[in-house]
Image 1 (spheres, rainbow, N blue to C red):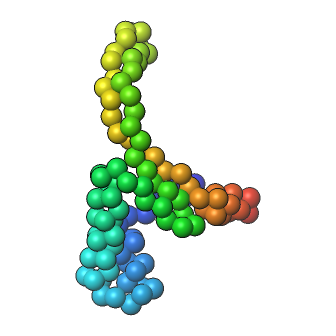
Image 2: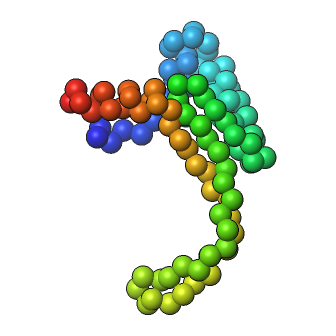
Length: 101
């Protein structure tokens, strides 16, 4: 792995270079898209990005966990978790890239 992390600034710079918007407009566009995706997920709806994957929120029920150090049972409260399922196109791209390395 390369160890590089893609940041919001990297996305804004890519939009600036490829689309030709100013850096300020590019940053605003990326922020707007990410805010909209976040708002949809907070409502509990699903976000499906063709050829990329699907983000969805799942409800986890209350359960009993165990502290591995003390073996003591600990209640884990119900919560919502974000789940990402990559598309087959993305999976195939990742696997093709790993075979060529």
